[in-house]
Length: 290
Image (cartoon, rainbow, N blue to C red; front, side):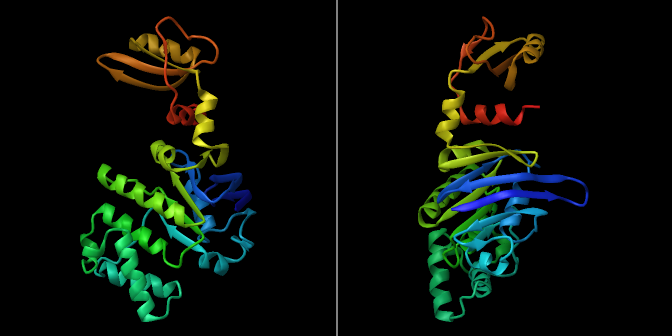
């Protein structure tokens, strides 16, 4: 288990990025869900030894992830939000470079490892292609390959599908699900709710540096069940209703505002009908609270 305790981080600019973050992360895929600027990347960088917290602790399998950076890196696979590549290198050369950095000294062992990784991420046919010509999806798949070197016990993936087209997002999801079944813990941060609902057994929601909830997607849906309502109303009426009820989302369709609100126990008004609650409803209901 990954145990995170009371992590605090304030940047020199005065931004309080983490406010006593505490989490218990069990084996499997764990989703950290939050809006941009919530503190997700700060937490990921601390766990990946790239940033020191002001205070707090994080341990996994007896290793102090904060104090023992060398020990942490031996058990870590990391795919950052911006994965830098050397554009003149080929995919094979890039993985060979990372394998050397991770201590795979034997040339034959590296060659076998790289061949297996390229096959896993469906890049075997592009092994000799220079990285400057890779698409966004190919770059992400190569990033996963380098993160898997050394059979890491902890894999950290930061905003993994940002900027990918739908086809590459689907490929990425299948690959992540397969990786989670083989590895100890896969910790992924995202602001895309569907990424969590479809893949993660457990999740946490973070906003403004604080954890708002920790649960399974099913528990989240059970909590908000029978409390989501929807109506299509004129724009002026929507503004009034938003002052009286907690609005989850609103969309303008054909001149009408399709409004979703939460109201437990009673119908907000005659124009409203019960709506099937989604994980996005649960998430938005939390992060939009003042």
